[in-house]
Length: 246
Image (cartoon, rainbow, N blue to C red; front, side):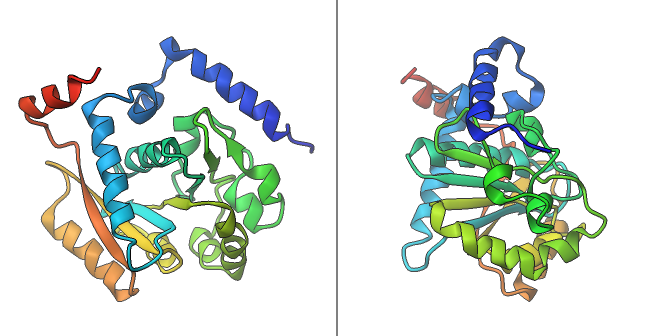
């Protein structure tokens, strides 16, 4: 089956951008794109800066974002991090490597009939599977069809070859991975990246769960470069400080 080319998909993405009055909840979570002067967007820029400072002595290009458990906001964090990195002029690829419960295609309103699993099984080339978004410099490789063996696919030689072939073309490659404590996929993928960021949700993530996730990552000698405290209420005076620039 012949897929539409990247130009056609890019035109569709721009058309979707104009329909801002029809945003879904998933799209609204892309606040760094729809509200660039909001205090929350500023926090994502701070996260971007912190990651860039962490790479002074070591190249940190391939970054995995995960959490200890589900529903802690990792997919929202990685989508917004990708946007602010792209807004800085960096060429960014976001890969939905959560092959069990993918969501990135909902956030960016993209097709998911082909994607990472299609590339790894050689059903599609990377060039035909990667999709442009409404955000300049940000491309997305959706998960593709859900496979019966996610861990084996992520840990395969095909995955290593794929990453070695594409990393020269991007400034940053971001991986949306499954929760660390739930399945082994995230631990396997962490060994193939330069750094891991753990998302912790205020009022939800249990301390023991966060500690367990860190221990599991350390067992694989993963490079944990930091954590994100998600969903924490901001002080009012901080909000007004950032809001003055609107």
